[in-house]
Length: 88
Image (cartoon, rainbow, N blue to C red; front, side, top):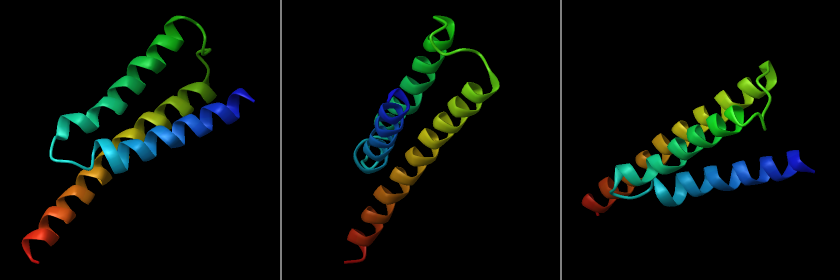
């Protein structure tokens, strides 16, 4: 059950990152989710709530990487919207 909640929460935050936070003129706003995810994962590992093993490290790296990828995609969506408005 906890895994399902994690996957659902992760996908929700990544979609929110791409279409809401990073898809605007303020680039720093899109950095909130990646930075919070790094802080959250480090906090879980320090508090020993997320054991320091290979699977958890891989999951953490994948999630943080996806956060930064979605941030970049959100910025690209914003720039495409601005460019299309200029040519209309």
